[in-house]
Structures are given as C-alpha cells and as structure tokens.
Length: 433
Image (cartoon, rainbow, N blue to C red; front, side, top):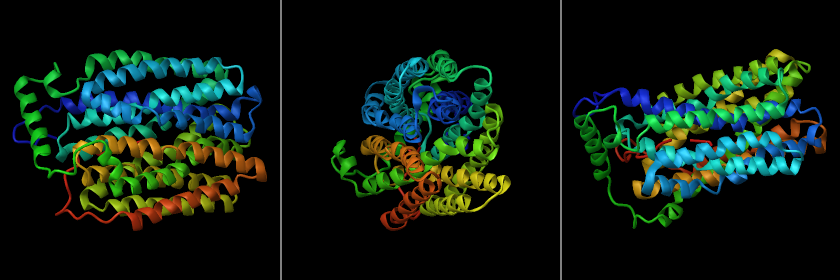
C-alpha cells in the first residue's frame, strides 16, 4: 500500500480509517435496509397498504436530500470527523425512536427524520478519505469502503430476521438504533480529520502523506472560478445526476421488495429463514462489486463498467417475472443484486476524473442528493403498481425501464475519458446512497 509514495507511510491508515468508516456506514445502511425485512412481518400494524409500505421505504430519501451539500461544506471547512459524529448520534436516536410510532403518519415522519440525519454522512466521509489517501491509492480506498453497502445487507438481513423471530418489530427498531451511539465513541477516539492530527502515526510520516496530497492537488489545472456554483454548471454533473437517479430508482425499488419476494418464494417462511436467504443475493453482489471495481481501475473503462452491469440487471429483473420455480428465481435475484451493486465503484470514480477539488465535493453531494430521490420513487412505484394491478410484475417492469434510461444516459451523455487526458480524482466514492 505504500510503494506508490515517495517515502514509506504507515499501513495503519488502512486499518484505522477504512474499517472504522466502513462499520459506521454499515450501521447507517442497516437503517435503510432493516425496514424491508420488517415490513412483511408487521402483521397489519399501522394498517399499511403496499403503497404505504413503499412510501415508508421511500420517504427516507426525501429527508436524505437536505443535508448533502451543507454536510459537504461543513466537513470541508470545519471537520469531517465532528460532522459525522454529530450526525451519527442524531440518526441513532432517530432510529430508536422510530420503533415507538403509533400511526403510519408518525412512521413517515420518523423515516423522514432518519433520512435527514443520515443524508449528510456520505459526503462528509468523502471529504475524510480525500484527506487520508493520495490519488494513486484512492480507488482502492473507496472500493474497500463501499464494500460496506452489500456487506451490511449480508450481515444485517439475517440479524433482523432472527430478531423478528424473538421480538416485535418495534423492539427491533429500538435496539438497532443503539449501535451507532456506541460506535460514535470508537469514531471519536480513532478517526482524525487529517494525518497531522492523528496520534497513531509519526509527524515525519504525516508530513510525507500531506505533501503527497498537496502535490496531487497542485498538479491539476484550474477549472472555472472554483465557486460552488461551478458544480451546478458542469454538464457531466447534470448527466451523472440523471444516471444516478434512474439507476437508484431501480436499485432501491429492488432492495426494498427483495425480502417480500423471498418470503413469497419460501411460502411464508420464518423471518430468520427469509433473512438468511436475503443475504445470499447481497453476498454475490459484494464479490461482483469489488471485481468490477478492480477491472474498471485496471482498464479505465468506467462507462462500460457502469452500463454493462445495468443491462444485465434489466434482463435479470424481467426474466425473474417470467420464470417459475424457487431456484431459478433465486438465481435471478442474485444476478440482479450483483448487477445493481456492481456500478458503484466505477460510477463514483467518474466525477473525480472530470472535476477539480473546488467543485467535486459539492458536485458529489449534489449528485448523491438528487440522484437518491430515486430511492423514494422506486419503492413507492412498485408498491403502488402492486396495489393497482394485483401483481408485482408491472412494478418490476417499470424499474427495468428506469434502469434502461440510466444506460442510455451513460452511453450517450458521458464521453469516454482516456488515460492520457484523465485528471486525478480527488474524491471518488457512494450511496448511496
């Protein structure tokens, strides 16, 4: 990990910063995914229709929008470490309190507030990673960090299922809001905003690392005025917002309803059984996601690494509605999950290749904020169409159409960036959102 820098720098960065940040975001992602496991087992509580369930999953992403850019600016100008700490404490309390709701309106509000506090975490961590890993290491750092997304589902779906077999859904939500409050202590004593502030590396080593980071930035040509408005004016940013929105619509539409589909395949199996089976597609997704990121880094073919998996996801989603049998459908669910997670690494490498530091942090916050509105659209569309048609087929067909739009935008809206003209990426990670 250290041969690319002028002087040896400690491997401890990889053991301190990446795992602590990954576990922190796994706990955040748990609150995004646990509701998908819980909804099939609410047994009529709060009188939720399928459309209501979709709204419960989707309203999270309405709140998710508001703190994206403010958190990016706060982390950049003040402290990423302190910004994440405050948000972690706030979302942990909000997650636990969501188990105390008595009406579906209260549930909507609780999910909105949870999304509000979690929304600022992603861009703040992007700022943190940019202060610890030079450009030649950034792709590896981001790939390891982003692996927390499918890994969270692999570990937490079975846990949520097991807890549902031993406690009510209310207590599951209350208990699962506590780990962020505990992990905040680890975060505070382990993470530093930049090498010069860390206690666990020498000042000489910190100096080498900070000089490498400064050299990365000095090598870039100027871009525009450097104001935050430049992020909005960049055409690639607008295209990436569109790509991310249509992709995430399909992504979260699939994720929220996956446990319900598996519950149907198991003929109303136990929550533990459904949770364990739900982990299988995400296990496959974890492997494919890392492999696709490695291939993308080696070849530089970012567009293909985003578009091709999405095409596979479209085919798998549609085939899953046409075939019969638990095993074939389960295999297609695994293929769909792998295809929808695979673009994460390559996609978030694109903004850093096209934009300078002055605008890339806010640009990524903008892409993540507006793109994640698809997290509202996808779950709600599937639920509403299921109620309207009596079948999930139409809903998943619509999700496939959204993914197809994302593919078209990647193919036609983003020009390829060759290795000779590629600019170093200062912030290259997602999401998501």
